[in-house]
Image 1 (tube, helix red, strand yellow):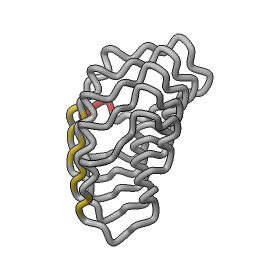
Image 2 (cartoon, helix red, strand yellow; image 1 turned 60 degrees about the vertical axis):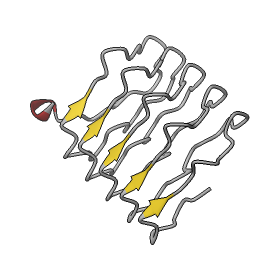
Image 3 (cartoon, rainbow, N blue to C red; image 1 turned 60 degrees about the horizontal axis):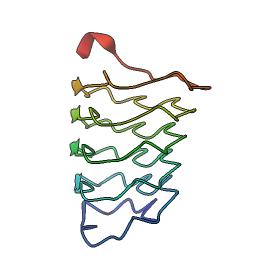
Length: 137
């Protein structure tokens, strides 16, 4: 949708109607100048694919996905890959029961110091390489 919009620093998606969206993959991929985006109001209950959603948003500092309903998501691979500047991410409400792909989920998020994945259920994973630098978390 906004992928490869490398000049964007901010983006107002507050009026976006997302209740019928099933595929959010690559939605903000390569928005490398994006520093902030408010997706807290996104209705994600029907989304099945969130792969590479924020891939290579290199300047994104924080992200509020607390209200994301991820109960139907099956692919989260590379969702936050190469989000170098991301320092915290609250995933406490992320339901991962149906997720089958999670490879590269946090790959190259070297400044991610605060994350809570205690509610991640990984029983159905087929592919999982999460890449966390444990000493920082």
